[in-house]
Image (cartoon, rainbow, N blue to C red):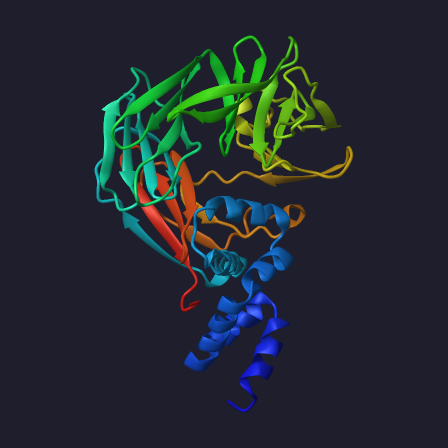
Length: 392
């Protein structure tokens, strides 16, 4: 090495994350220098906070909340890999277990949950070892979502929100014992961390927090409101302390993690948006984070003409809008969306043909070395591992 080690360290301290990753791949000596600097400083944390957009970083931190001391390096590598999506390699394998009549899946840390049309719930480890299997409902399980679960490898401690027609079942399991909390007459719901917002038949909306009392999970109601006819809730989304509602064509919010929130607080009006077509089916509309609304709409004059409307919410009451034609294929498309305003849904970077059966659900999780997609049909679950070769 031509320059003194101390001088090179001072130079590396001023580099961005992409330069540091390139330096690690020069040779073993450079890799040692970067890794030594990693141990001495918080350089990868600085790179993450300076280079990764805040909304993206929040999602990564949620995925890596129980990771080891190298989590900032892993976060940066995964983020950088998917910024260079044209170089991503994808491996696809079929899960080694047979699960009949699949209706939904959910993935969190070291757990994989699979729901069936006959009400059976199966929980596996990330290596597909069966942890639990039983019929917990007499009806089809519509969706699953993990809430307030410990993703550690040393034991099982998880909670699942199980959705079925007009009801929710919060299923808690510690590896031996299980208990269930049932909420009846639920039309729709949203989950974030250990909070849940649900709408009941009749228009009552509630935000509750899942708490642990003497080893037993309970729901603590922290806010409620009601929507009176003819207004109706199209969709809702909880994300990072804010719950966003689309009521008819009006966007409203409530800050549910605030210490000052009371059960009687009124939702704040954010903006009113204009759709091309009426919102007939609320299942075709969803909110991403707290700033993107997606609506799949059908032109009644031309049944073959389907569109997706994207609304990007801005400050105050401003928003921008983009319409794109809907893709009707049953394959998996992986996009890189650096900016919603520039989105072209046909300019995807990867197209994967999974099988002949229609896809019914997809979930995703981050690992230290890759991003894994779990793609399910009614009969099979495929794992798609996306990674950047030789990044380490």
